[in-house]
Image (cartoon, rainbow, N blue to C red; front, side):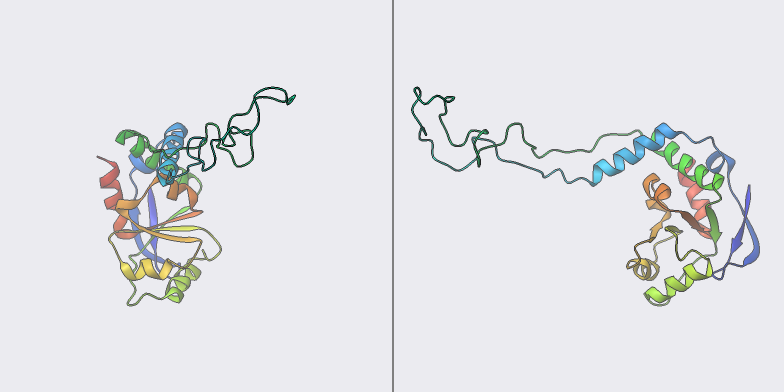
Length: 209
């Protein structure tokens, strides 16, 4: 499969990039995608949630009423969970939500996400991008030239470029990553995937391992 390389104004440059069928042309595996996205979202959770149980609540341990003769149930502490201000029963505790996922499954998930982008015609190859200074208007001009101003975009750079990253940081629908940081969640979350020309071969090398 070949895709035309376009410039910053959305015009074809006359060059073409060949995409590997072993990466961009596979039959997508939905289960691998589900597991990889689930792991990514689980890793984002801090897991610092905590509520106090009855042994942690501050309060008197004095017996609040006599054992018998009141007509109600026995009560020995204000810290019991059935009283207002008492401890919570089986409340949340700090925990780690992360889990292990095999490298081959993660690679299959990324390949599947890329294959979906190709099937949906949501992938374009852009000549390498570089800004002299970090300015949001430069990145807006780039998106406007590509007719992507109103879409969620993921731009994949071949190498780290601080000016391009800073220029896109204030735009809620735009995300910029290097080829090493591409993951399944970001691929699926974007309406349009934009690969820089130099990132294609590097991405194929990483996913072919």
